[in-house]
Length: 95
Image 1: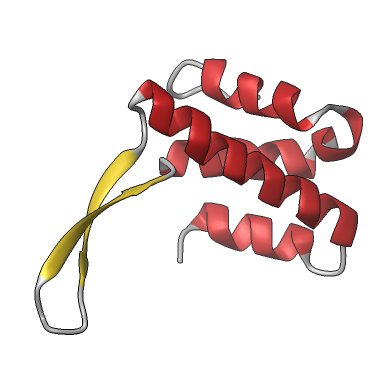
Image 2 (image 1 turned 135 degrees about the vertical axis):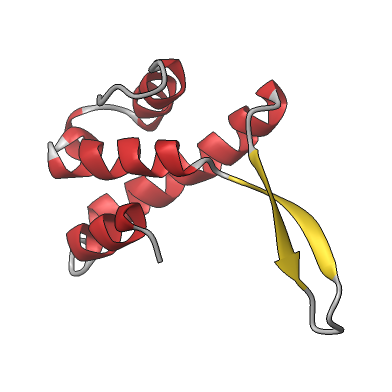
């Protein structure tokens, strides 16, 4: 698990409304990121020992979402505003 996963997990435990908003943001990131061709590609093992290519949300986006959650953005902004902010940030910056 990554630092972003840990940060989101700790922040979201016991926070149902924020967890729902985070799930909606992640869903929109997958849809819009896919449309933009910006999802990350990973090879994952299959049950038969082969490997398969899958598309994932870039780790940088998860870090931005974790930072947004920690700063209270999930209750201040709409899902679409958060998604657009995450997608519009240049690499290496924090929302």
